[in-house]
Length: 187
Image (tube, rainbow, N blue to C red; front, side):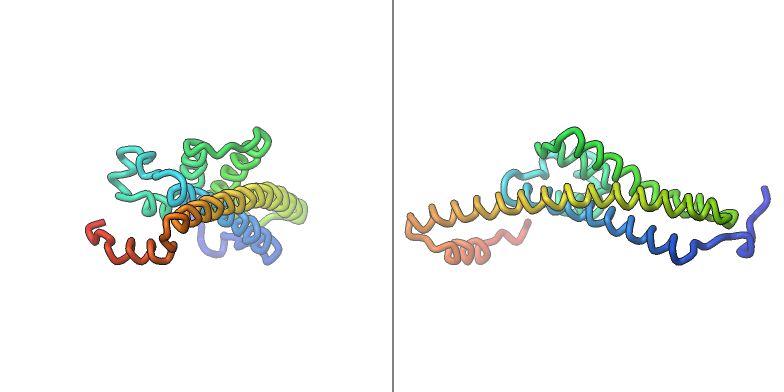
């Protein structure tokens, strides 16, 4: 097998690199939104640590540690298990975006690597990246809106709890101070 020398390798030009970067930005924002949704659910509504598989719990120890290292696919699965409901069309977009993001992260540049594209191939690469940007942007918008909605629901729930505590004569700041001062340091 012939080894390729640096002279044989092709580095993407600025147009390709710029579009690749935009696509990956939207993919990363999608992932961050998915993590934020799960974090909000875990914090405000349901302890999701119980949703980790035994191997995930052994590897990550806590749900927060799982979120730090989770892949887009595993985030999607946890969102489904947590009851996040998207329409079939939205799910198709998100699933396609996850596959697109994974391809960009693990294969796209290597496939571009050799040989340098001619003008027609260069235009096809740019068109392909434009399609990927669109897919990832749509998924980022879906997850952003979902994140906004779940965070608003969390705020409403916290306000209801704070209101109830005030009815009992306890100010939320007093309650929080007591929680932090008495926090179990073994956790």
